[in-house]
Length: 351
Image (cartoon, rainbow, N blue to C red; front, side, top):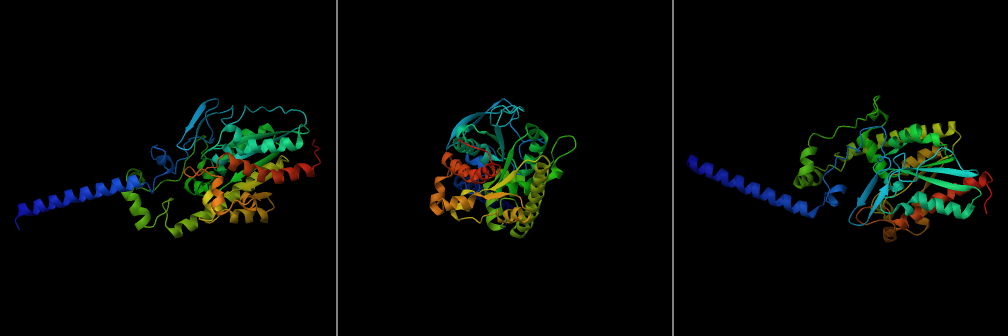
């Protein structure tokens, strides 16, 4: 075979390979199996290692409107003076009032429902119906999408504690474990009020651009969404659970020092409630029990209500994965049980 023939064959082979790779990329991109949350809605790839903020405080710009325009729902939200989705916070309390803060991520913020149908707002309605104006109940929505317990502790200790809450609820779900795995714990907070997250793998720029590369990484090399193999994932999850235990203890110590009752609520995502995914909160639930931190397992409460298997889908948006208004209402009903028990135990009278 002449040199010219060799070059021609190599060229044909190269062109064929490029065409095949391009076709495979197009097919996998259209299939969308490994599309990220942002990409499902036509938005650019966003690294899981980046929480989207560069300061200690993971909040919205105060008094600015943010629009949530997604395929399953859309609405606009106005942030208050602290960058949270509620009315402006004031330090002075109304006479004979009880101020409750609900802290957490997008499930507390209420993604998937309007501001009048979030879990905190529904909880407020339940408590006001029971107690009337004696005492008058205020439930503040202190949730921020894509937050995690470390951002929430910093926000509470540095900017929300001054409002003197009478009761604090911290809500946690499985995304918090992966968030802490990817971002780290207190070491992320730098002395100059900036944050430094864990570094992504070197190949993430390729992953961001190629769905073919994603297929190879996940289906052939068996890496998960956290860019880890199963053994690495198990070790990382254990470490992250320990990190969350640490920040829960910090919440408890801080609240105890200010004589504020603390309730930790654990809640499922749809796959965990319908049984297609293992519930990842049990170790943290066991930890709270071991150190006597009051807690509620919302998954058990929802199961008692009959939301098991296919019925769980009544509570969540099928594509987005957040709760709908009905889901947040049932979350609030579950949360109200220990809150009412506490209020009744300290002999608040109600109408």
